[in-house]
Image 1 (cartoon, rainbow, N blue to C red):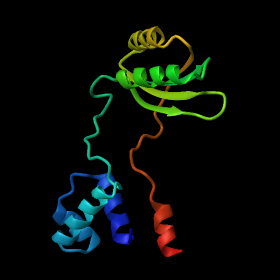
Image 2: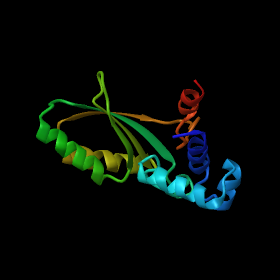
Image 3: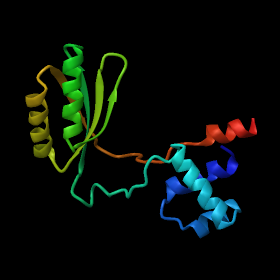
Image 4: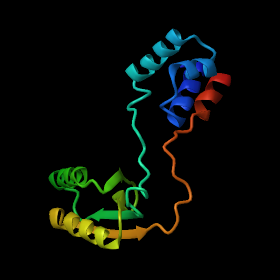
Length: 158
């Protein structure tokens, strides 16, 4: 990993539709070496997937809910059931197992409060050993998919 690789990662996560010609100009390489670097970054797992980001509001998903889940048992089979259930619920766009008082944090997107209620009922019907606390976002202050890479640059320059 060098400065060119880091710059390519920054450029691609900002706009994955950049042409190889534009990327090459930005990193001061010819197109073939640039293309080879990008493929190596993919092969090594630095680039895990290339996607299109959908504007959730344009498709009617206006409500973001942060859901705190506490399980009343840490039985491995029940935790597997919870994980499988979360995978099956498309409204859950992120799920984290947490340390501390909360076991899981879910980020859920739905079109309205009634839709959230429907989601909630499906969740507790499938997984009945949960305590669920929901917090509705009033304003989205920041939303990004770009991973900060300055620590990698600092490591190179340090």
